Length: 101
Image 1 (cartoon, rainbow, N blue to C red):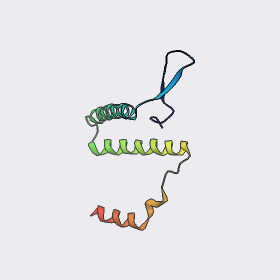
Image 2: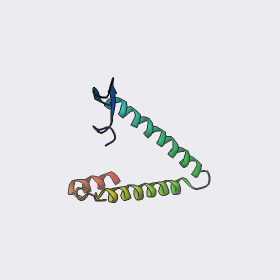
Image 3: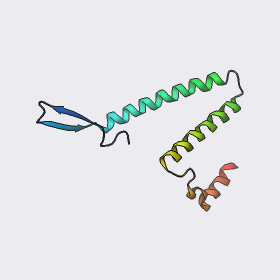
Image 4: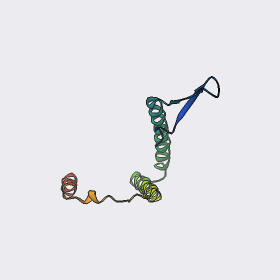
């Protein structure tokens, strides 16, 4: 985890009195939010540039497929399953049918 206990800053007046001060969760969360917004702006730039030469539906399918491939690869790399068996539960299947209408 990026904002967990592993990130810390050290404050010391000398080497014997070294104190570990954990990073503030709010500051770390704010930094991650800014990075996420920057990534969204870059993605938006790519999508708008791609729609100048390709149909919108094709661009959305390409970006969606690329996202699925990346996230599936990351899940497999971490040893997680790509599909969660609870996604095929009766409740979710009924909900999905009613969302299609």
